[in-house]
Length: 165
Length: 165
DNA sequence: GGTAACAATGCAGTATCATCATGATATGAC
DNA sequence: GTCATATCATGATGATACTGCATTGTTACC
Image (cartoon, rainbow over all chains, first blue to last red; front, side, top):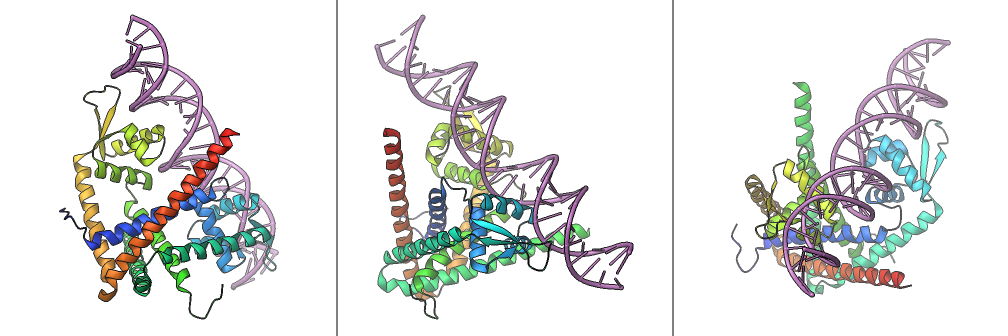
């Protein structure tokens, strides 16, 4: 691959996005050091904040992991006081997982930090570029979503073929 | 913070970036399923592609992990035929890790895919928005880099204080 | 009422990623 | 030559994140 002394824009967009992605991860890891929170557990917490109290089965479906895995994640979060388990009102097999009161405050803080960071980052962008940036990132996210979905279905199709043979 | 019925731009930029980040990870995981490649190992491979043959110690420093960890990662990559270990020409303690010939081709493929994906994503953006998008993402990456670095140093300072007491 | 499906979990297992402690060997300064 | 230091390997350990299978209690259907 030939590199000219000015970088090609195609390369830099993706590279910057990947860098941003890496920096986010690094920042999260640092922020959660010393707590029992990990990416997987935080994902569960966000899901709970977004969708409200849920059965473990529902969480497993929405997060696309095995129910068994949810049990473990909830165990850890419950031990840390982030969530509570309560019986389902009508189905005695099921368990409702809810955010603990302290975790609700915690999530509000996270959302506040989230908004602050967002404002901070947008502040680094020239005002005249902001609208276009917004549209562009939106377009990229949409396209990427499509691509990943398409890949997923190809994968499932291949799997189905393999089983059929 | 006031929410109008249209979402505030501050929230959406960050959210979209986080979504993009998540989609990248998902895509990588899918692409590497069935290979011995994992995020950490791929990171080592990229580092090797970028910096050329290196001692394990140098890799440990650059990737900011323990030397012991590098041994394990290199073990796995060597078993998979991605890297080779060879003696250091002048220091018989040291070992030089290099990309295997097949891995060099593999990395070229990855870079090609990388460029294709980049073009594909940029293609989803309205032509008039591309220049601003580029500048904007660049600005955001730069700002985020600063923030993470600042956080890091605050963390180190706190650690130093703790040790000093 | 009997049976099949369902929710959660105990148990067992795999893989990754990381740490520290220890030891073998090589280097380089004195 | 000797001794501190550097490089790497091994072994032990631990946390996390998954999985599958078998079990227990519950519900729903016929």
